[in-house]
Length: 171
Image (tube, rainbow, N blue to C red):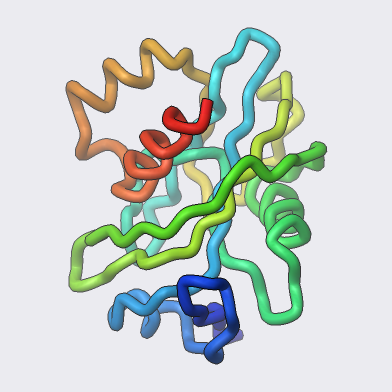
């Protein structure tokens, strides 16, 4: 099934639909969301993208990031992808949104109006990973994450580094 993204302007007004990979080739602004999950120790959940992903394979990123479908709210999409990728359900709250553009290599661009959600989840054993999407997961402290990104930035998705900095400005 062809996956479509919702093209928008900077005010989140819908301009149309486009096949996802074509939107990434053209670098067109589209709707997206990012989910940050934390445990009770304040550690952030990271996922390593599956090796078969068409861009940014085998790189670490936030818990879930994807695109809402036509007629789907950002929250509905975030909850859907949590279940599809990680096999979990949890309450989410939207914290902020912003626009960014990132070169993800291979002639592809992420140009997204990104709505950022936060939730809590404790146990790694509760997860049921979709191996087509997620290679592995782990929780990490903010201090260790900053150190890893500084030492090996190539191990992390470009958008995650951008979104993480934006997240830090809001909290």
